[in-house]
Every structure is written in structure tokens, then in C-alpha cells.
Amino acid sequence: MKDHRVVFMGTPVFAVPILEAIIEKYNVVGVVTQPDNIVNGLPKYSPVKEIALKNNVKIIQPTKIKSEFFEVIELKPDIVITCAYGQIIPSEILDYPTYGCINVHASLLPKLRGGAPIHRALINGHAETGITIMYMNKSMDTGDIISQVSTKILDEDDLKTLHDRLSIMGKDLLMSTLPDIFLGKSKRIKQDSSQATYAPNIKREDEKIDFSKSSWEIYNKVRGLYPSPGAYFLYEGKTCKLYKCRIGDGYYGDNYIGEIVKIYSDGFGIKTSNGEIIVTDLQLEGKKRMLASVFLNGIQDKSKFIGKIVE
Image (tube, rainbow, N blue to C red; front, top):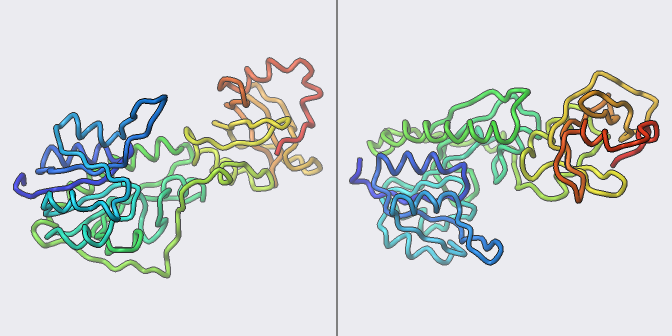
């Protein structure tokens, strides 16, 4: 196994278990990751770079891989494995390795092509998602499927729990798939593009809660953005991050959308299109994160709190 020259391309913590497993079994001759971020004047390494440093693997950090691919080719990889790298891979790399370039993608392709498949699976209310190992081509997430594995999305799942589960599933599926690739026995299943859906990266406007949506849609958005970047609404003109919530039983048909309708022991209910969403964990702009029950303790006249409109 150690005679195959592997280049790994990835950046975030999702890719860490995958890289660690590859290093343990194969000859990883290089790791390609995004350039360091600068935080308070100091470089902050990507999680993948940290693993490469720990294992004394050569690190390449091109600003634009499209034009800075020479160092990768010079490593003479037999296979390139990518996972959440963050840049489009140029044809000069795609066409080089004997065993091709393969990608570990966190969805059941052709569903949720794009950069935020875990977020979008939760936000869109999918019942299941999974991992796809695929051959890469010039378009994003459109290559032939090699293998897939699925998992149910539980009501209690959020971005962190689903992310962590899929990361381990990605590692396990890749390690069981690579031997067939090296033996020339891997499958190549064309994607049905007519069934494709998309998972674009999360933007600031995606984080704002629309209380005219149903309670379940709001719940899905909150858990799909937790713990980061977090969903939010506006309370008295200030941003209020909503980290945790639950769906209430009340309907409040005569109340306004976005109206605070009831106080509970663990939080407060806000009117939605079909009921209420109960805020239980929040962070008001300029304040620390706190339980909604603690937030309510700081409100002296709760009779004036009921009836306020948030947006």
C-alpha cells in the first residue's frame, strides 16, 4: 500500500479523520491546503495543515491552485484525493495521476452539489444524507460516482453532530473504496443531472430567520447553522443570535408574525406562520451567549415583553 504516491487536498476539520487514515495506510507525499489565515497578526493554520505538520508531510499552500499547480505535479502522485479543499482543481492536476483524482463529498450526489451540503441538508429538511466517493472532472461535483453510504438525519441533529458523523463515515467509506480503485475494480456510475440539487455556500442573508416560515422550517435553519455561523433575528434593532430552540404547541392565529407570544420556564415563544418557535439559547448583540431563561430574568416588566415584534 505504501508504494502508491498520494497527494491529499483539503482544509477544514471535516477532512482531518480522512487524512489521518490515509497517512496511516498509504504513502502521502504531499498535502495541499488553503493559505494560512492571519489572526491578530499571527498565522492560523488549517486543521489539515496541523495534521501534515504532525506527520512531517510536505505542505503546499497555493493562493490560486488554477495557476500554481506545478508543485503538485512535481510530487508525481499516483492518485489525488480531495475533501473540502475549497478551490476548483485545474485540468493539469485532474489529468495527471494514474488512478485519477477522487473526491469525498458530504452528500448523496447528485443531490446537494456545492460547498455547503451539510448545512443545506439540515436547512432544507432532508430526511437523509450521506457520503459520496466520486471521480473528479472539470465541473463541480458532477463526476462519476464510485461508492456511497447514507445516514438518516435525526430530529435532534444539528450541524455539529451531522458534520462529525459524516466525517467518520467519509473516512470509513474512502478506506474501503481505495483498494478497488488501485486494483482497477472500482465502479463508475454516471450522475443523473436531471436529479441534481445544489448547496451553495452560506451567505449572511441566509442566516436571517424569516418568521413567516413554518416552525419546522425555522427549526431546521437554526440547527443547520449551529454552532456556527448561527441563525439570527433582530430584537429592538439589535442582532440576536438564536442558537437553540424548540417547536411549541401554540398556534396564536390572531397574533402578528414575529410577535413574542408566551413566556415559558426555559424560554419564550415567537409566532410563526403555523404556530410558534420557542427560543431557549441566544446571544444578544454586545452580550454573552446565555440561556433564554437567564435573558428573561433581566427583563423587569415581562408584560411589556409579550407582544414585542422581532424580525
